[in-house]
Length: 245
Image 1 (tube, one colour):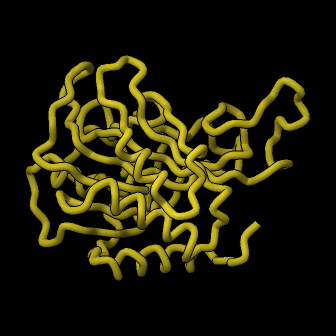
Image 2 (cartoon, rainbow, N blue to C red):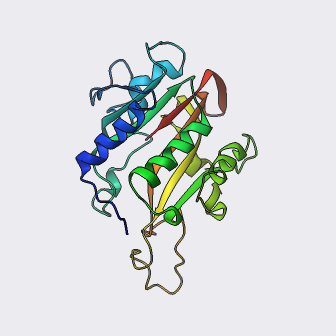
């Protein structure tokens, strides 16, 4: 499928190098046990150590960061434990590559750089990539046409490969409370013959279809702009941020 082949270590290093070259500070992985956060049992995403930055309670000496964070998703809102062993993509422990902007760049740069890294550096065929954007099924939060338009502007990206989904797939929240925002997920089409249900005449492969293994989520670009303070309360954050992984 790909002209270029990378080991796991090479993928990690090329990711970090790519963003350091674009003004990001490399930040080492934080502990698996998040300090001072009673909402999490374990660190479940790269953004955990930056939670107070998003909330405006902490200031770092940099506005752009990149790292490879050690994570466990075995409890809470992001719990992958039940999926471990059912497929090749869920694990109890994993490393999450991520880049962040703290009130610096936003959707335009996040999307452009993701596209460049995936296609130019890693050599993933452009026609194999799909992007999903947020459209609120409750019509309470604005549809993310901005992100969709930036995807369409990328050289070589197929405009028909932009899809809209609701809160379950395209509105990211750290936990029951805390930073949140619309997200844009990048999916890889592994091609015909890669779905375990392909022999089922009633099955039609599609992005985000439960049980379909043809499409693999590669990357999630989260546009942090809200703080959830309750089940039905979203408050604007002091600044808009980017959180990817």
